[in-house]
Length: 251
Image (cartoon, rainbow, N blue to C red):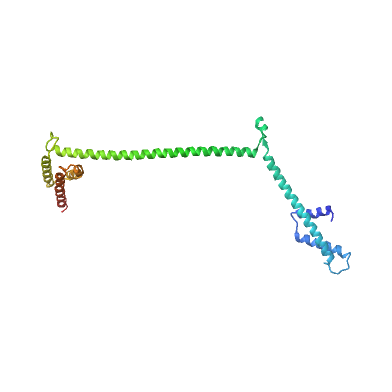
């Protein structure tokens, strides 16, 4: 089969209207017709015709593989050229030309690398700032909590001192020091006054609040060995009077 005949035979495979069944039918017919003029064998598919048919098909396959390989190589070559063009050297200055230049791909990679390094540096700085601010804020919050606690404790101390001062000043406003007996006398008078008020039928909510403050003052006298027993007995009697009043109020 000549080169021209092969190219003509191959061209039909690129036809959009190519029909494989029709082609095979014509190919077999042409081979058998050629064989019928030279052979006396009555069979249409003789050994000679089948051999010729096989040879023709092998030639077509060989040329088909060649064309496929050629097409693939051309396509690959075009893509390689395209990549090569996209990687042309960029000469931005005489200095860069002296250094051999930088490819476009390498140029963009360098920019990306510098951006990543810059971003990483900024993130590190931001994280350090956040950690520092969190540490400062935590210290400020803890200090504020401690200050509020101190304030509440000081308010409690002032309240206790005012309660003691008010209770003692009711007996003698000008006296600043007391003996144990005088303290006992003051507490007895105070207890009598409270019992009298609790026996009334009016609203004693303010008096009950005052009694609660007197009970809370027990801790003030814990380290006062002479006054603590006196005040403790007073509180015991005071609690009894309060509970009796509340029980009577609820019946």
